[in-house]
Each structure stands twice: as C-alpha cells, then as structure tokens.
Length: 326
Picture (spheres, rainbow, N blue to C red):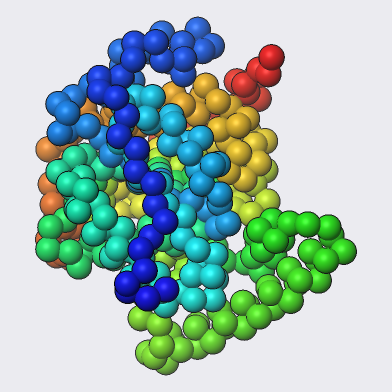
C-alpha cells in the first residue's frame, strides 16, 4: 500500500431526523424510543467509526452500522487489509493517519465521535488511529470507545483459529495452510519482540493489549463472552481493570455463551440497547466536565496523572435474554 492508494471505506449519512418508526426500538417490548433517538443539531450528530475484525467483509460490518444509522448517526466503516494486520504491519501507521484525514476531509471532526472496534484486528487498527490522533494538529471530539470481543493477548492458538476462519474451505487444505501461516507469523512476532527489546525495528507496539496504556481517557464499553475461544473473558476483564485503575470510566457487559463477535446475532435486543445506552450516557453525562477535562488533557499530549476515581461496572446478559427466532 503506497501513500497514493486510498482506503476502501464506507460513509453513511442517514436521514435527519430519524424515522419515528424504528423497529430496533420497539422489539421485545422495550419502551425506550425517545431516549435512544439521537436528535441533535444536524452538524452535531454523532459519528460512529466501525473498525472491523481481520477478514471481515463489509456486508457483515454494515449490519452493525445499521444499528446507529437507524438512530440517525453518521457511520464510517473500515476494515484493515489482512496482510497489513499480520505481516505488513509497517503499513498500519499510514492507515491510521489516513482514517483521521478522511474524518477531517469529510468535516466529521466537528461532530461527537465514537469508535466501535471488533476483535484484535479492529483494536490493532484503533491503536494506530489513537497514535495518529496524538500526532494530529486538530484532535477529534471522541466521546467513547466500544470494544467488541477485544482486546486480548496474542496467542498462537488464537492466531491459528483466526487464520483458519479467514482462509475457510475444506479442513484438508485449511488446517495445513493455517498451521504453516501461523508458524511463519509467530516467527515474525518473535523477531519483533527481540527488535523492540534491542530498541530497534518497529517503533510502535503491535500487541493491542498495549492499549491499556493509551494516553486518552474517554469512556470505554467492553462487550465480551465467557465462551469466546479467541479472546478469553479474563483478558478483557484484566485490560478493563487496568484502564479503570488509570481513571477511565469502564463498563463491562458479559454476554453468556455467545461466540466471538456474535453477541449481536445472539442477543439482538440487549446488544442494541447496550450500545445505544452507552452513546446516550456519554453524550448527556452529568459528569461531562470531568470527561471533557480528561479528554483535553490527553489531546494536549501531556503525561496524564491518574487522579480520577476509578469507575468500573459489570453486567451479565443471561441466556433467557437471547433473541427469540421466529
């Protein structure tokens, strides 16, 4: 990917104001129509940036962006190329900077912005977007970040499963190819660790778990599962606890028995209400002055002092809340 190449992104500008007949707000007997319809001034509508998982097709990511578009939010969808996530990671800083440029070029930098990132692929991309924001002259008005099935420690077993899912096909060809690619990438990882230890090579950590030390302190929502075979619940909870210890307002929502990045498919109503509640709270929080102060502190690139009282809440979504199929 050269600097002249553009990104394959998608931006949606839904109608404003939203239609009063919003099916996602009436399912399951939920009476939360007005609370979750984000009707603000046209130039202040929330923007949700969705960063897909490794190998994610846009038609799948579009199902998630539709949640926000039905609330009249502007959405931007992008998934980093698989090769950039695994073996051409030196291209990721450019992608992060280019995404920030797209947001500013489309005049979205004046809107309140949220990031919704999926799995370690999305978290890794967000890591570079965060770095690009620190380097930008005009920081974005980010109000919060949603981590869906992320982040988690890098493990060979998780890498193998991720590669296998991306390749697909018959197990006879899938397993040997996935195993070979996993071995090759593990060697790359080892060399990166050695180079980093020696103070050489790739200047930015390539492990999304390093986001625990992120400069910015806007609120974060974690959507995860106790049966996720790629990103263990313990990884997410450990990461979230470290963020809370650093003064970040953290919400944990554990979906019982739902697969990796399949919480929405399993718990549609609970999922929609959870993400919309998070946006609503971040936009209307009575603690906005404190949040704005912590955000500005990060935007100015000063070393942050963790004086805010840690705040972490956890909710468990039980199986009886799963979406009932007709």
